[in-house]
Length: 298
Image 1 (cartoon, rainbow, N blue to C red):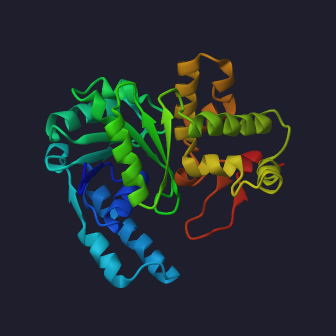
Image 2: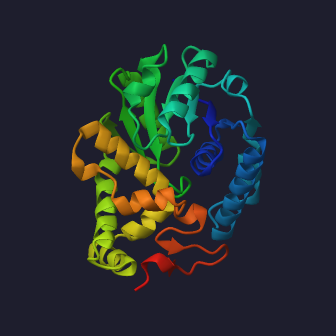
């Protein structure tokens, strides 16, 4: 299938990043969000990120203009997907929300349109089951920040056709990404391995084994990780980490996946990491300096 028209649902961090890479590669993109102000914010973010690429010398002003011209916005799912050959859903990691969106996508998108989800943990098979085209449903899990990170984790649902998998693999390479195809089990591969590590780091802090900076420094300098697990959890969003761990715990029924009580308390208290201004660290707008939250200072 030769895909030229792509719709992206959700104009948050992941959605605007996905729209950015498709538009920059020459695809016609419709970015959809029920919130018009969120769409305006997304376009501003894409423009700012393109400016960063210009400063680095990887993009020209003309390419920036062409990229922005490739993006249109819409507040209606039904209107926004009616000409799409591929729809990528990038809404909040909430199963009920995603199932509702997929019902709308299935009802409004053309019959041969591939329906993809950027979910990081929710079953592709479960999502596909609410549509009349389960063979055309697939996981297309981008990493944050989307314009920079090379990996796309492609997840086959139980009914996903080989043709769709091959199409999405080829498409990912067109975007300059490296596709890795996995099967549909809780957490897939990325989060099945990553989230228990993050959870264990939080448990180590919770049990007083080491402090925030010590845990992150050991993993950065000892294991060559670019970011420590607690800082990474803040970057992902502690609420997102908590949700993924619950999916793993529910899916496998193994207590090793249960979210650490400290993580649960932080999410309940609204300390969600970088997006809320505080998690394990404090985040000050305009500052790159990291300060450990006062809750964890010795």
